[in-house]
Image 1: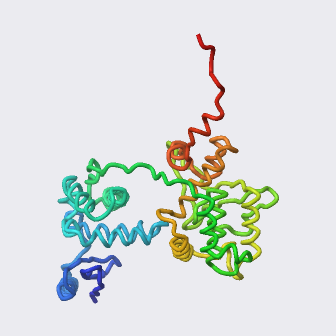
Image 2: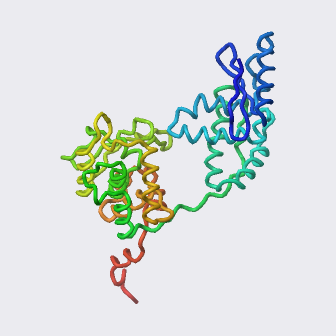
Image 3: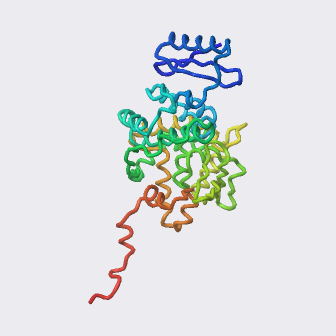
Length: 355
């Protein structure tokens, strides 16, 4: 039997084929979606409905197939689903994939630029290009990816937020309840400890939330980032080599104190020291940040904070390993806040003889 489910302001009809695959279509009204579904069921019963060939596949069907086979199995599965659902409401979704050209992709880019930032459009275009590559390499529905050669929006400049002032750090410790709950009995206080730990180590939120007791090597003053579970650090490529995403993070004395606090108050029946999931951490962090009255601050900005504070004590390669940034250019341009005045204070009065 056909089924219909809401999709934004539209409705998606789903018909399952005998081979386990499915055909879908999005219509403006529920009645239209049911009508399409009933017609496809009638064709299936008389043997005239078969899996689509490349020349018959709609862009929407490609997006659905890619989401099911690939996009739903990544760390960004939830975000990917939201983006793909949005695309299926765009006029491009009703077109056959064999009719899509780079010009059509450029028109889609311009429509999306009116709705989201250029950085978001570029991220979405990466995902869409991956979907069309899936159609080329895996399904053999296409021979050329129409996203290749598209006019991408200009890349935004690297984020350059000023470092947190001491009073702002204190305000965040107050708003999370960390200062009055050093035993970390509440989830919000544990988020405060995660915030301070990120400032000391440069670890990402997902890495902190996935620390297990056996990964905390207190005697060595390090914590091991295994990066083998969803949400942890992803692998990266360097030339033809795939680099190991795991690493050992050096710990300051303050970082050890924070991990000791988290470990001592670790919730029972939890595999991870922090005992919070990504959604809880995000919601509680945003609430505490807003209560502290600090604008334009992301949890990931703590990587910038840590890199700048660690830089005077670690050489560039050691710093790269410590915070998990394998592209030294990214370390230089984004995560490290250069202070020319500090550098000037280290210079001698003159570098050579004056003639």
